[in-house]
Length: 173
Picture 1 (cartoon, rainbow, N blue to C red):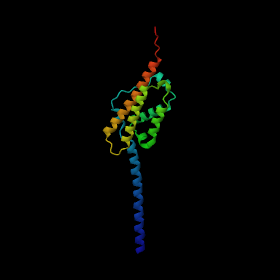
Picture 2 (picture 1 turned 180 degrees about the vertical axis):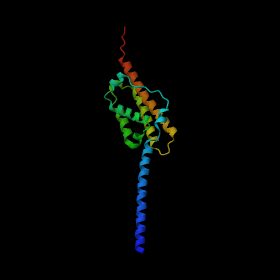
Picture 3 (picture 1 turned 60 degrees about the vertical axis):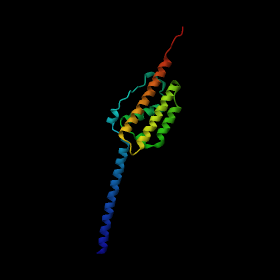
Picture 4 (picture 1 turned 90 degrees about the vertical axis):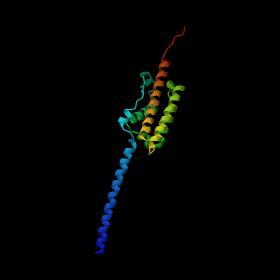
């Protein structure tokens, strides 16, 4: 009789312990979703900043600059509220920024654009650090996102100005 009681008690313990592992797995999956969705798309859409798009001439001049277009994809994901790029891999952001600086096309390579790129690099690293903190306030994160968008927009504006200035043909008397 003691043996039957021990077997029944063992089965009950095993049954309840298996159920707890499944609950833990569900909780960790939910935490992963929450960590990349720190802000909503609506909150990001409410941010006010001036956004400059690239001109056709500028697009033609930088058509082979892959790190820039990768950065543009990251910015578009952030506009949707997805900060997974900043949370996923620690070195990915650093590698993108290094490639961006090293491969600037000659048509848009100038001191003013390099300065804007440095500001963009700073804002991206700030956003990365805030996205990886557990106790980041939403307002601080939104401010960092706005700064990043503004810096990216300023890079676009400066590239447009450079290409426009270089394409002017001024005749001298």
